[in-house]
Image (cartoon, rainbow, N blue to C red; front, side):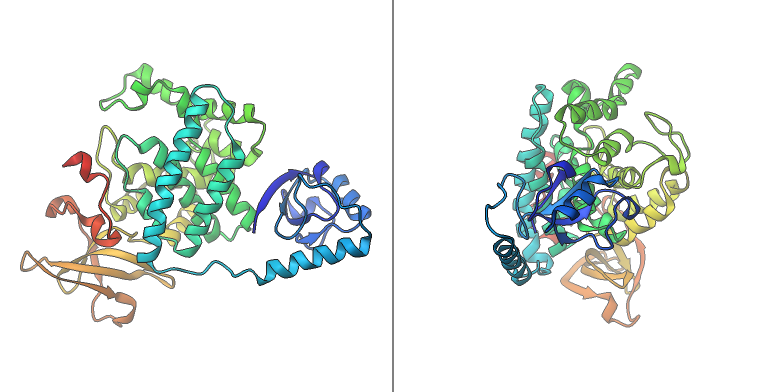
Length: 416
């Protein structure tokens, strides 16, 4: 599936409409997925209250293709052939954690370079390439489909120096997973991913010495940082290539449901769904990541803290969906089992948030390492269970994330 968002004025006969950008009440069609075959249908779309649509160029014409000068019968035959080929294309298959971690690690490196380039263009006043960004979102979306925990968990393992760029990659992946958990359509999933990737682009208007300052910010510097949502919206508006939804997330991902956020102190339903999603995903990655001025918290501890803040900061239903998407004990969490063993969470169980797969490696009772073993708590029928979360710092575990990922933690290069 290759999706493009286009204006209805650019819609042509032979294009495959994947999804309308707007409410189902704004267009006259019972179904949203179809090939535009007649001038009548084309005119009905253009006369509706929908101004943009998502097209699938694998199933129909691309926006840059000329309309074929062939008969209606020949055109329909070509469309039918495209549809048949698309239906025969193999769906993205789920992968195990080990195989997807390897692919996700390469994608993280590629994504970081792409975001560095895109953000550097923004800092220099150049227009950003939204087409390139959408291609990157597609790759991240495919990775999250293959295994929802691999890339999301790897993106958390970033050095303080690369935080600004990898934070955007992480929030993109988290937004995609959350959008799917909320049951949004695939076009909206990609829109959420693009919003996550670009939500902090306004930080490129902040001086680098302020952005990466290791100590406490002065009041003046703090006010400068707080301007990044509005600066980001300005940058995106100048690109003329992003939707109002993406702009909204950029501008309002620091709003809080109690009205104490910024820049507009919006409250409750004044905040859009995607902006509420952006707020949750942004905070989670921020507090689990190492920053120039603090170490990141353990994933499970971060979820606990966010649950305490959720009444004032986050939409309750969005936060609940977020927890379901990554788990009560997200991948990389250190947990204690009833048996006295300590382990790191490897994977989530789709039907139970409290019974993930855990790699045990240490006896809390004997205070010694034990042979590593992956335990699927869902299959133990209560013979062992998680009784609490533990702090890696309390046990002086320095390579916890290497245990679940199987790859060197990039942060160890800088922390020694």
